[in-house]
Each structure stands twice: as structure tokens, then as C-alpha cells.
Amino acid sequence: MPHKTKIANLTQQAAEVSRAWQEHGAKGETEAAEQNRVAALDLNRQIAELTKKQAEHDEMTTVANHYLETASRPPRFPSPSAQLDGSVLNRIDREIVLDALNRGVDKAASSYGLPDHERDALGHVANVHNRAYRAYVGAKSERAGSAMARKIMGDMPDHVQNAMWTVEDDKGGFLVAPTYRSQPIENRIKPGTIRSLARVEPTTGDLIIPVIRQPTSNANYSITDFTGEWVAEGNRQANEQVLNVDQLRIATHEWQGYWVPITEKLYKNATANVVDIVSRVIVAAANLAEGIAFWTGDGIGRPEGLLRVGNTVTEVNSGHASQLTPAGLRTLHFTLRTPYRDNGTYAMNSLTYGNHVLGLESTGGTYVFPQNQGQMPFTLHGRPVVFDELLDSVSAGNHPIVFGDFAEGYTIAEQSVLRIIRSDEKFIPQIAFLPTMTIGGQTTQLAAFVQQKVAA
Image 1: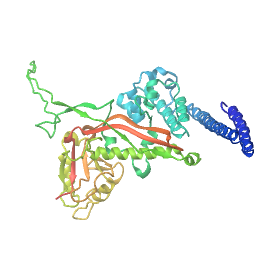
Image 2 (image 1 turned 90 degrees about the horizontal axis):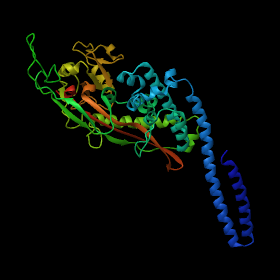
Image 3 (image 1 turned 135 degrees about the vertical axis):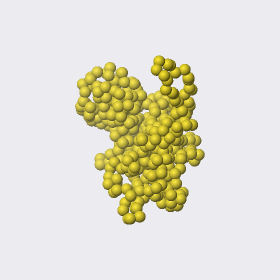
Image 4 (image 1 turned 120 degrees about the vertical axis):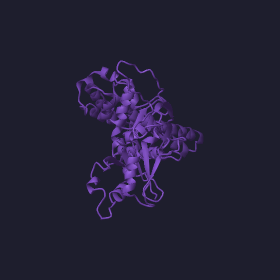
């Protein structure tokens, strides 16, 4: 081993100098004793530094061998071309790789219309990324974790490695593995309703998108004023019409969680899965932060929420000062314009649906909505229901239900997905992790939503 021989030699020298220090001290030879004391302290400092380096080297070697052996196992999406033909990955853009690592291989492959062999290549990348992430977080030092992650990523193209581990700015950070972002985590905080339903656009900065201006006529069944007319056979249309399209800028904002220190005792605890603990904590915080911002953020240093103050989402009264009513829910449903209603989704918290919707009774005492509607998938008036505990409860003046076409009406600009940065120095002797992401969000079509207000 690189440092063991030197450590042994220095230890022997330190012992000899320490004996000389004691001997000179016993004889009252103050100057000689002081010289030997200083020399002994310097030797002990060198021994401590080399011992630490040797420990890091031993750990890196042992754990790296384990992860390298794991990385050599067949991927979840076995495909010879994915593993052996590097040109397959070279043909896949970094944005597609990042999308696959963020949203999942199947969704990315479907969105970009990838052939099977490219989908398999992305599956192989996802497996390697998951192992590299575990190595980076699970190692006892940043140096060892970085080395193990680099070895596991191996000979993958640079643009693929950079999607996993960004070095594009001074912050850096390792992309949190999708395995942890998609799992249920502490307190049941899962990816928010809006993220799961909205349009998510990757971007390198503020996102500028075209938005169709709302129609001034035929609004109940059309999303635009653009039209035409019937012409006689053989004739050609002579009129023209300007397409009413605006440009919308969605600003991105950086979010950082608090540092998450991990004690050395926890790292040494063989029964503690440090990777799992760290991932659960940071994903919970990130999901909660963006979930709140996507609903009620004011757009100042954070995303602009769908229900923020000043966003005039159409309100439909429930028909009762403190309760929901069947008539109010029916009016809510049919108030949303046809183009959006057909793709609409209801969002509410669990108790609103379980107690106040399914609990509605007719004057004869029977349930208005059959109880089998409480089975998955949950529905209301034939449209899906999703639950978000951040939404209002049923109480006078509250807005407990939102109904709309989220993909058409709300856009998330994702400049940097959730990443993790580790520091071995900031909280010595603890190791700390800092989660960070850069995202934006904004309502792109207010007409795509309606909300129920509890009011007579």
C-alpha cells in the first residue's frame, strides 16, 4: 500500500524522538527537550495525515471493487448494442439523456419517439447512473465517492456523464437517482400534483414559449380566433388572418435545501443505508418546496404558482356557505371550456374527496356518487382525481378543488433538476450534503382551469 511503509518509518522516528525529549527533560536540558518536542509533534502530524490518506485509499479500493463488480452485471434493459456500441449513445442528445434520468426511460423514449435500441441504451445509462449515485453518496469521503462514481461511469460519452454529474458551473452536483425521486418517502411527500401533470420543458436559462391568445368569440369550443370559410369549388381563399400568438417568458430560480450533515457514527452503522437516508431527506424537502411554489408561489425568486394572489382562475361557488354540494360540483365541471374539460383532471386533498365528495347524500339518504368511485383510479364526473395535501380543506371561503387541463395550462421550466453536492470539510468531522435545483413555473393558459370556492 502506498503509505504504509512511510507511516511505519515515521512512527519509529517519532518514538525515538519522544524518548529523547523525555530524556533531555529529565536532565534539565530545556533547549534540547524543546527541539525534540517540536520534532515529535511534526512527526505525529505527518503520521496523522498519511494515516487518513491510507484509510481513504483502502476504502476507495474496497468499495470501488464492490461497485465495479455490481456495475458489470447485466443491465435491466439488456441489449448488446446498448453495451457494446458506443455510437448508439453518441447519437442520443444530452437533453434526452437528462430527460430519461429525470422522468424515467419509458417516458423519455415515448416523448422523443426513440427506437428500441436507443431506449435500451438509455436503460443501461439509468442503471449505471443509479450505481454511480449510490457510490458517490455512500462513500465515506468525497474523494473516494468521486473516484468510485467515475469508475462506474467508465467509458460512457462525455455528454452522458455530464448529464449525470454536471461540471458546467461552480456549483456542480450529482443528479439524484430517479429511483429515489420516484419512491414514496418520509411523511408521504411525493412528487407534486402539478409536476406530474404539467408540461415540463428542459432549458438552459429562462424559457420563452409561444402561447395562443385566448379567443374573443367561440370561446366555449375553440382555443383560438383563427378561422376560415367555405369556398366554391375551384376557388382559392383570398383572405388572410394574423395568428394571435404571444411570447411568454418563464424565469428560472435556484432552490437550495439546508445542508444535511451525516455523523461518522451513522456511516459506520452497518444497518444504516446512508444513501437511502440522505436521498429521502433531500427529495422530501425539494418536492415540498416546489409543490408549494407551483401552487402559490409569488414569482419573486421562486416559480409563479397557479393559485397565486392575482392569478384570476375562474371561481365557481359551491352553493353552500361551508360545504360542497352536488349542484356546485356539476356547475364546476361544465364551467370549464370543452377543449380543456375533455382532458381535465381534478386536484384536491384526500379528505376533500373521501369525506366531502364521496360523502355527499341525496335528500333520500343515498350517496350521490357511488362508493365504487372510491376505488382506484379515482374519478369524478368521469375525469381523473389526483390528491395533493397542499390544497385547501373544505371550509368557508376556501378553494378546495381545482379542475383543469394542467398540461395545456401550466408549464415548468427545468434548467437544473435536483442534484446533490457533498462536502467533507464544511462540518468536520461530519459529512454534509447540499441539494440544489434551478426551475421555474408559470400559468400559460388561465382558461384551462376553474376552481371551486366554498360559498353560497
